[in-house]
Image 1: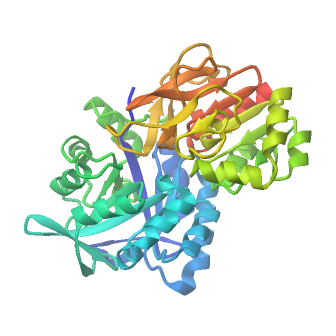
Image 2: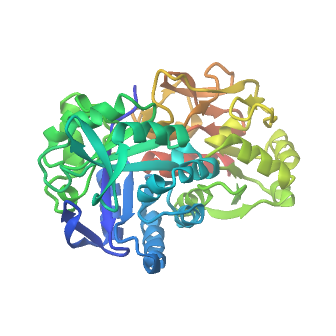
Image 3: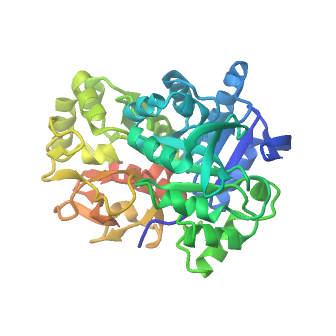
Length: 254
Length: 201
């Protein structure tokens, strides 16, 4: 008996439709978020993340409606984010049905926001999303969907985020995202071993072996992927059976 | 029967209500003392900070109606903080009194494991649990918490372990509590809620 490793599909949306791209660019349509959410819940996903990657101000009502419709379908936890800049933004996402809020660019620009959300909703509801790119032997935090470099080293930023009240870290390797060449194992291992909260690794997943590696060597508590699930290259049910056969503790759906 | 959900402002009231309605239950949410007094089935969902729950119960004058209803035998299900609130105190809010219906103190989980205890874990039943009826023994439930009730109380019916053993499920004749979130625990969680509704009927 111990905590299962989580498999988390991610729906990147333009507000209302699921989209996908490589290195955060060249977006194309990948389906209806409500249909995908219901399918993943039934297949045994442990949690779902829905992001508004356009995060345009005038698009918020559409995204909130998407969260509501997705939440309606789910019997598993839902995290939502993209463009959350204030406590009021976070409240509207939680009211729409999200159990957790993910923060990214806005937290880098104003780290106090992490604490404001953590005090209101509890640390378990605050996910600090960190996009980072390898620079020599370390990882540099990037914002604005991976485009803009910051002064933060990912390890220091993750620790700072936890001090401020984040209850979970969602790591995305900008180098690996969309490449299907495998997770960035050293990145995940370095962060996961230096913070006290669970770490979700993301970026680069393709084959089941990548997931075995990210849990065993990358010390990740959860793994997130998008297009391999959307394109049905990999079913969550089959992935979990494989992981179990390799000795990774997972929750198999009934 | 109407299930009364105590709405103290927690984030998960909507999802608990939704999960109950999926099971065909009639649900009303309230923060009114008189609705608690007249209820025949009470559910206290909770998530976030223990102080927010206890302060809000007091601000709405719900503490005494709740204690009275539970003492009188109204069926009750506490979820997450709703379980923790039943004890004497919580280290998360050391200056506040719990509902003091159960003996014991809620303490933080140890720091040799990652906190919050977040994700899917299994239970270790200490005896026959009515809430676990018809649920596979190896089922997983979704947890998201850093504080937990002691594992050794007489009401503890099943435990879970993360750094230490703690109460994951408690049962008395009419009072039930779960540390995990049945509203977020897939089919197994829905069955927990269904079992509670049957027991309360």
